[in-house]
Image 1 (cartoon, rainbow, N blue to C red):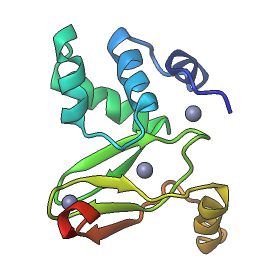
Image 2 (cartoon, rainbow, N blue to C red):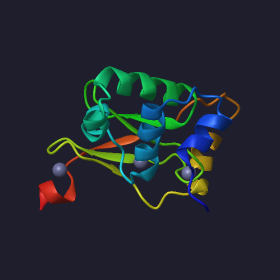
Image 3 (cartoon, rainbow, N blue to C red):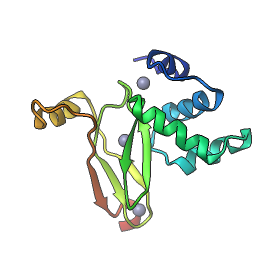
Length: 139
Ligand SMILES: [Zn+2]
Ligand SMILES: [Zn+2]
Ligand SMILES: [Zn+2]
């Protein structure tokens, strides 16, 4: 499957395109791991993009279904791409080092299972977070 392009996703979802938004979405699409707003901010602040802009962009991306949120601990939120290349899957959150990992293998069968569990309800988002200590912290 061909990789998604940020400018194209903004266009097909009728999202107002700005330079910071395109850059932020590109960073999320290129990241294999979920990122936080402060992760993203540290990657774009050299270009003069402030944290408030990052938060606003993430809010818009979430509303447009371009990214999905994963709630870890307290108010900490991670974001990851929610395009066809990244169907819903469980995450593992390490309570010791704070790392959030995507649980693989993930595929359409797995996300279809979540949808089946919800039966005829209108599903907006799926979130499953397993918590504990990661292999680094237990080893
Ligand atoms: Zn994609
Ligand atoms: Zn850990
Ligand atoms: Zn993930």
